[in-house]
Length: 193
Length: 123
Image (cartoon, rainbow over the protein chains, first blue to last red):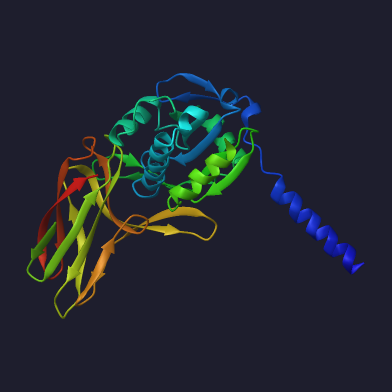
């Protein structure tokens, strides 16, 4: 009986490791890119995706995630990986503030080149909320803060994450976006090509 | 660049890029060369509607949160680092976009050293 339990435990662990979670390509999510163009996530299926989750009003952690993605993107471009079907996505979880024009401005201030191999995405709040839940990205909106001049702002407690999605549509690797090693992500991308 | 004002040295001053009406963060290393502690209790700048001292917390569940702090203490003959993922000067509601290479002015207020004006390069 004890041996049977151990065997079952080993089998269940193996299943968990081998069955990576699916990226929700086929759930009909239609987002907007930084140019305001509608994008169904299904159009990216079959590519190797590097996906980061951010909000542009985040002063400390999301810039680290974006900066790390920029380093990964730059190295991937130098290595010619972008020509092999690798696409970068930065998806905001603050869609009310992060409209396409804000995402476009964010790309400018972060000096991200205008190539289409890195899209910044937003969408309707309900859609983004559902997408984040599917992806296990936790988003807790903080209280509204009102300044002496009447301006309002809020901050968000969130998961710090970069995903690498394989051509088979499954999430192959999870990284802590603000602390990730560029080399580690590149190695994972190479394995998925 | 190292800024020396009395017994306070400030080095590695820089700011994050940011969109107009968005936020940014300023980082630096503050060294106190005196035998008594000093306290940074206020920061002002015309670049943003509001300036605060904040601390980012990395929680065990993988979530990142941020809290305002009222002051930071720079120990005697020691230093305090404001760095990504930790303490930072938070610029809330920027009056204009901050692009790489531009410079912004801030004033730091210490309880003993008084007001120190600094310049941070955006990068």
